[in-house]
Length: 179
Image (cartoon, rainbow, N blue to C red; front, side, top):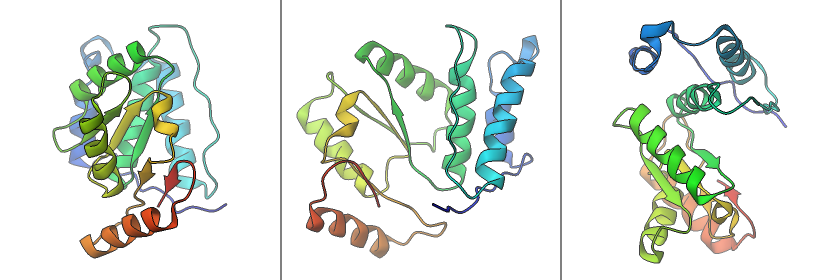
């Protein structure tokens, strides 16, 4: 399976601001291991035509989330939606707090998990399918068949967005969808 390369400009003012907002910059910023992980991920996303197949692991508190957030932000800068799947409600809540604190105001974050009302979940699903949500965080609720993502082109038009959503609904596909 081939996919288009992501574009990364380290001088992009949005990325520079995101990088500078890292709370540990005053104490040296990313560790050498974190920097290597970020560099490897960006290389995978920007230079390879195959989907990334990488696992980041480490003890609690070593900065896995910060590494992941940089990859998430790169995806958003490339007009993509991102899913953060967590095994527990507590971890979803923790990731939501962290993402909302670290991501710029223009990044739209949604959630699907036990504490989200049915009404809010429906609204989140609708906004996700329309491409209005950049990051979706949740538990196994993300795996339900009603979850339909919108594959955004670099220059997405509203009529294209509507067509993709209509096709997803009309086809009634099973499982999570990438439009």
